[in-house]
Image 1 (cartoon, rainbow, N blue to C red):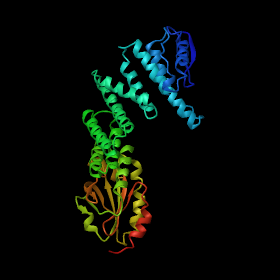
Image 2 (cartoon, helix red, strand yellow):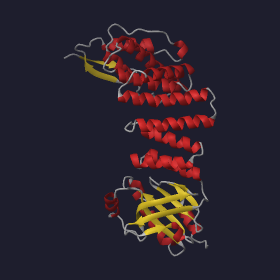
Image 3 (cartoon, rainbow, N blue to C red):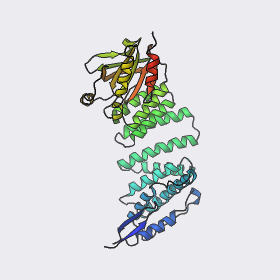
Image 4 (cartoon, rainbow, N blue to C red):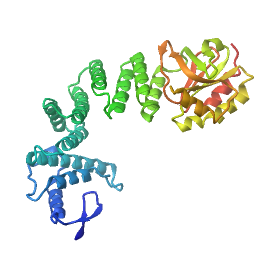
Length: 379
């Protein structure tokens, strides 16, 4: 068995068998020379693959172009290198599809081209035009389910950029995006792009002032994927948009079956710790809540632990590891801020003052400071 080393564009050195592929390194070197100098659309020239190129060789080079950009580059050099690599991908995929229009890896190559054009499009109108043309062409050719979902995702990006280019009124652009995000979620319920789509949908609804709609979307998002980082970020954004010093109402069911309503606790400040068994860090906040309870329970301050999980067995198993003198709630019946239904679907803190108004929210709420100030107030 003969083996040898081949240096790829990322700088990695790979050891591989040369049996049956003795020209691989030469082919890749020729490809790098053919595609390596392009930095702008107007520098591109039609190119042909070397006769010895194979489908596998080209796909391998495309994968190498996705490797990490060297860290010792300046920001300007890094941006130029990313642009160069993306145009290289576009040209290489064009050459691949021209030679092997019915290749088994055709869909994968098309997705690489879509991603490259989407990265180039914000700064290059020719790339945006090419992205619009490609997404339209793919959509009309009955793509496979995976390619169809990816193509629709990049079609959303193309619509957004094109509407910005055309200076479409902001309210019209937001309505268009919201309608398209919701249609995507309905049509592709199993797409791995859904977390990105949900996050973009919620952000756009918040930007458009539709906080109630953002709350509904957040509820669906949290129910679908659980307390992921994307869900946590979306919830933080919604809570920030709703603002502070707004009337708050919460209704929860404790582990013993008792219903607690925050309206019944008016005259007391309330510190609420929403936790999830799926997020270990949130359970780690329990000692902090115990300290606050110990320091202030005699000074008109109530502490509530509230699980955002839906699986009661999971909640009970998690609570075995800690015992608290304050109520632990296992179900959220309702939470409203300023009359708007807000699903709490991820770990967070909420602090309400003695008048029933929200004074703090979020993972980084300064609980101790608020507890000290609010607990000394009287209605």
